[in-house]
Image 1: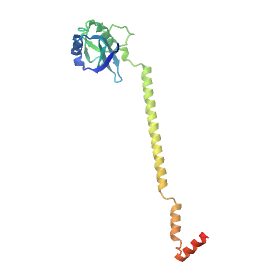
Image 2: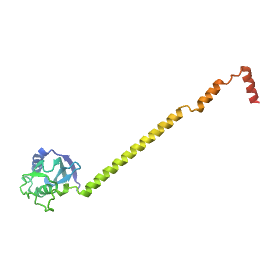
Image 3: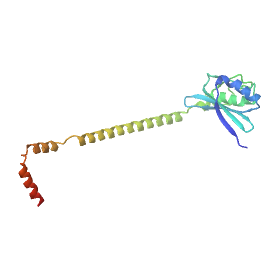
Image 4: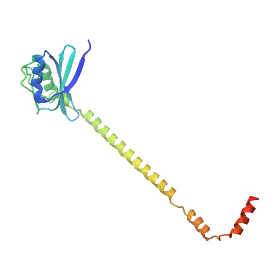
Length: 193
């Protein structure tokens, strides 16, 4: 059986109504998962399945601990596991979960909250180092390009400007006596012989 899978954005305010429509149409809610993004927000994916049709709905921009996400446990009770995970691992504020572990679904070391959203000191140092290296490479490339352009401009300027020898030759040619037409013809004959 070939699956027909789609990814479709979903507005947070439409989550419950959309889930209700899918349930009425016979879809199962297979999973809900969180993904931490670079801007420190969380995207939530809800996967609905019916036959060979798989619909992934994506809610973007969830702010950890602030954005209230309504629970789907009144419609799909088994989703309590995923909602507790989203809360405990990513810090998503799920409101109305019928089986809410209140942050105790997983046990973490003391002081650790939302471990999937923690950047370790090593990871942070690696990110900062990579950013510095990229910035240095860009600065070096810009400097090299500027120096190359300056050299090319200098070479072009030197090629088009008359040298000191060129004006002297022009001056010497201008001050040399002009031969009379008969003299010029005689010089031509001598050279031709």
